[in-house]
Image (cartoon, rainbow, N blue to C red; front, side, top):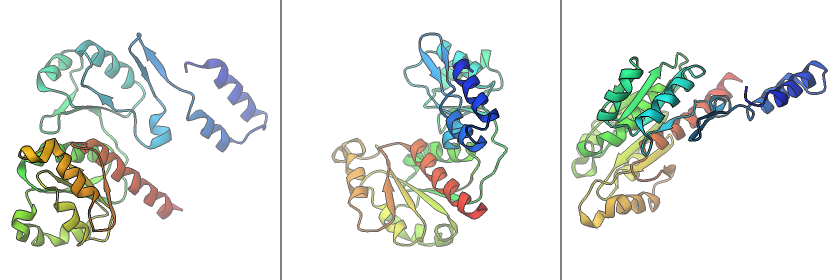
Length: 256
């Protein structure tokens, strides 16, 4: 524990009955972080506060920095996960972190496994095959978080019969993540068919007038269907984390 004095003060207050153990846990959530050199501060209590450990954003970090971060985090977190990691960098990392798993489509690397499984199913749909990298980033993230994931690829509105033939997947889902580029119409259609929350993910796939995903983003934000939330362009990770928060909250009500 970095802030030893604060921790000792907190524990003494609990022992003396000045605050309850429950209040102590709430305060403990915001105490612990660990500096690594002069380039990072690892938030070890992220899982305690939010339900999942801090995740490493890989872009802009050197392999040496990544190795140090993985080494420190693995000592306290059940799962250590890094996003947007290129295959050539993974080869360097695996020389020092041999148990590092890599999911090339999602560009995610991970150590460890979340043994706790949450109730609820996250179904992930893509409009086209070109949207798969973003969708797999969502899928792998959700699975590492401990959720059941169902995948349904290439069911865009240009061939709507492909989607309609899989309506049971929409009906069975507890949260839907819908990934689409081009004009971004698929989330509106899906939200009109299902009764659960829909998280829309615009991708940067499309011709020039799609403006790198901006057209799909605006379509999703302007949807006439209800129950849709929209994350940033190509943000499959953020969509999965939001879906996880929704289901964790639902689990809390079920358990109580």
